[in-house]
Length: 98
Image (tube, rainbow, N blue to C red; front, side, top):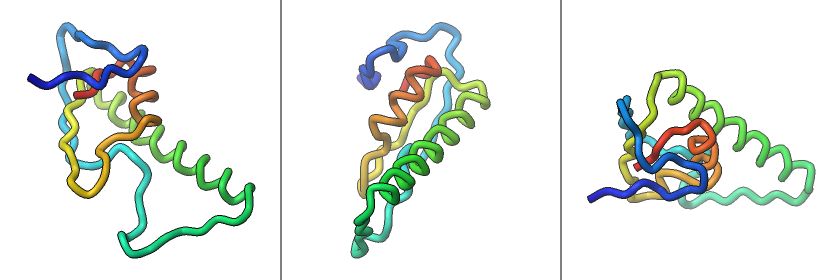
């Protein structure tokens, strides 16, 4: 039996579900495994975090705009399929994530 993510504020039961299935990660794009990004300035780090937040929010809004209220996420073997920020946004949009 699959369980919902259990994020605070996220629905744990949905009536008249409109189910969406995604096969991509709800997190910011990563560099290749062999590459690292080194950030030495606070302003640059802040800009990266803002861009990541904007990217994830845009993905979540597209899911919401599609009419989805239950989201099935296929797991990735390379990295986490979701992150805390995407789960937070989806919970605020009342979308259950499994």
